[in-house]
Length: 383
Image 1 (cartoon, one colour):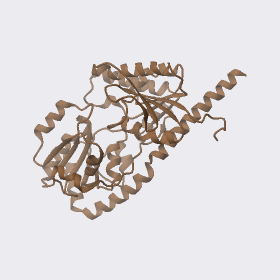
Image 2 (cartoon, helix red, strand yellow):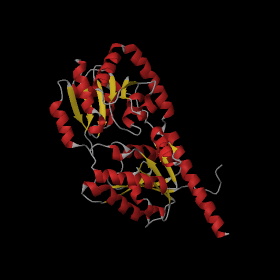
Image 3 (cartoon, one colour):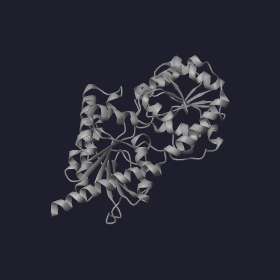
Image 4 (cartoon, helix red, strand yellow):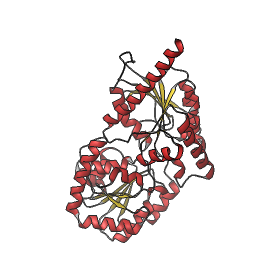
C-alpha cells in the first residue's frame, strides 16, 4: 500500500544507455519507457553519450544530458559511466537506474549516495566479437550487478532464472514491451520493388556474428525460392568487417537495406510474407516482438530466450542449423493459411502481454518501494 506522504515526483537518473532517441537494443527500451514513466509522475534525467545523442530539455517528458567519453572503443562505456556517475553527485536525485550489467562495474559510485536499481538486458560476454579481456571484465560486471544495486531486474525470464541458480540472487523479471503500430502503407515497399506478402524479412539492428545471418543466407540458398530476402541493419556497433563479408557472399535475391527507422522500416515487418529471426543470442529481442506484433508469420531460432516469447505463436528452428531453418521456411510457405492464423494469434498475445504502460508501472512500483525503504530507514536513524 502506498503511503500518502510519498513525493509527487521521484527524481531518477538513468545511466548505462547511449542515449535517446534509441536506435536499437537498450536505447529503444529506455526510449519507449520515458513517456509512460513521465506520465506516472517521475522526473527523469537520461545521461547519454555525446557521440550518440544531443542534450534536450524535454524529450518525451525527460531531460537528456550528454557526457563525452573516450574515443577508444574498449574504454567508451566505462569512461561514459564514470563521468555520468560523477555528474549525478552534483545534483539531487532520489535514485539511479543503471541499464545493462557492464556499466555496473562502476555502480559503487552512485551507490555511495543513492539507491540504485539495475536492469540486465543480456550477457555481453557471450558475443563472439569480444576478446578475452573484455569478456573477463563483463563477467566481473555481472557479479557487481548481482551484489551492488538495491534492486535488480532482468528483461529475460531464462536469464532471470540463471541469476537465481548461479548466484542465489533475487532478480525481478520485467519483460520488454512493444509499441502498438498500425501497418504503414504498402507504398513504402516501392523503394525496393517489393510486393506485399511476397518477400522474407529479417531485422538485425547492429550486424554481428551472433545475429545468425550466415545461417540465414545458407538456408536461403537451400530454399531455392524466387521470393526476395530483405535484411535491415547496420546501425551503431555493427561489425563492419563481418557486414562486408556477408554482402560479398550474398546469393541472388538478397537485399541489404542498411539501417532503417520509422514507417520505411516497419512496412517491412508489416507486409513481409515471413519474418525470420535467426539470432544465436538474445535476452529479449525487440525485433522478435515487432515481428509477432504485426501478425506476420514468424520463424525464429529456438534459443530459450526466444522460446519464452514466441513458443506456440511462431515457428522455431534449431539455432545455427541452416537445414532446419530452410525446412521450417519451406513448411511455412507451403501452409500459408495456417501460418496467417498463427500470426493473428501472435499479434493478440504480444499486444496483451507486452504493454509499455504496464511495464512502466512495474518499474515505478520498484522505485516507490525503494524510496519507502530509504525513508523508513532514515526515520529509524533519526529516532
